[in-house]
Length: 163
Image 1 (cartoon, rainbow, N blue to C red):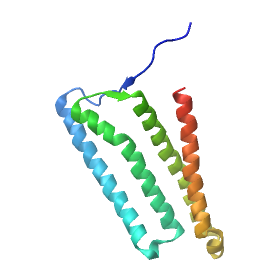
Image 2 (cartoon, one colour):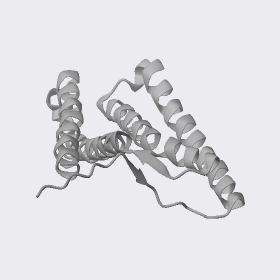
Image 3 (cartoon, rainbow, N blue to C red):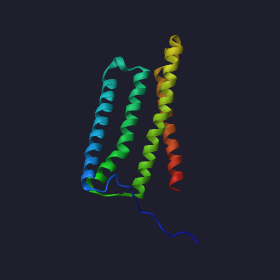
Image 4 (cartoon, helix red, strand yellow):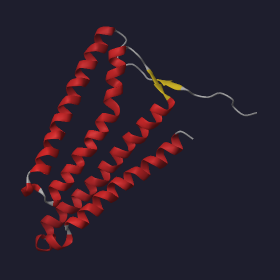
């Protein structure tokens, strides 16, 4: 006999049961979210606007800022909404999307940090070969590989979790 039940939503564990603490959590999350948006936005703007920062190290820093923005924008808005409106439910598809996006951004960030470590290794240990080993095309390929690997890892993880 097969299981005929279907899941339409999940209930999230609340941070606090009292309304005052829920509102405090909302304001705290809002402050953290705005600080992250401001900090990463400044990094992205500085790297994009200043031509002297168009080097591999700053290119990877720009990618890390984008990944951090994606990661924090995946989880905090729902947590803030739950704290503000005193709700606990998240839809099945919303939960799957949140897991997929969060794992995508976190995994890609880990892979990109590995690429940054390689970049710093080349810059320190082989400084005369740095320009020939890490050209702009190579940096784009490594960043794309990090993003793609994060996407594939998240796809497998999410499909396995929600199967």
